Image 1 (cartoon, each protein chain N blue to C red):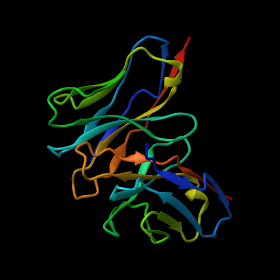
Image 2: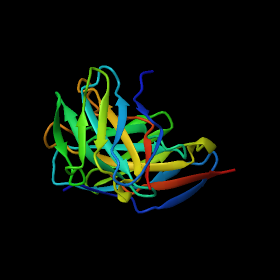
Image 3: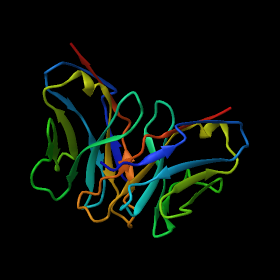
Image 4: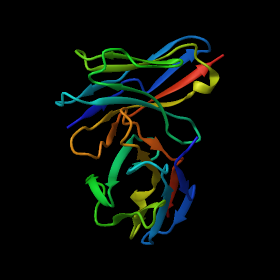
Length: 116
Length: 115
């Protein structure tokens, strides 16, 4: 069974600073995908970034980058130049490649608070 | 930009009543999902739907739950006899199998409160 672990229940970062949100995963599959989603206080789930297990380069999307270390089974999200609007819950998730459904397994989340 | 929509945004129901949560996935997507998030907890997979049938379901998705795609645009989750523990945010998501990234796009959620 797949498992996602996010050990930081809460993080603080000052505006304009970079922050790293940790995510480790456990799977016996050779092929898998990792996602990060943002959940603002309004509740919706916003897709941020994706990393495939066979991708040779770390994924980047604007201010978001994914620090993928396959041997350590970690997929940390790095947010550069934090903005007040980045304050939200952040969930790491893994795609299940068994079958065709590709369900997502989520971690418990990290609440990020950006301060002035 | 196309998006997943869900109605209602908030539903209050009494224990034992039936509720139907509605979703309109992104039009060219073929995979549909329901997830739930109990307040303060992580998001949990309920069911996936493809080609007009359930492709996978979790242990949570028992006989009280059912899904349907009644027409070409809507995707519904029915809870036949709600329990207090069904109170949660329910998210619909959809996916385009044509992309290589497999990301699922989530709707804004329906907050279900069972009293």
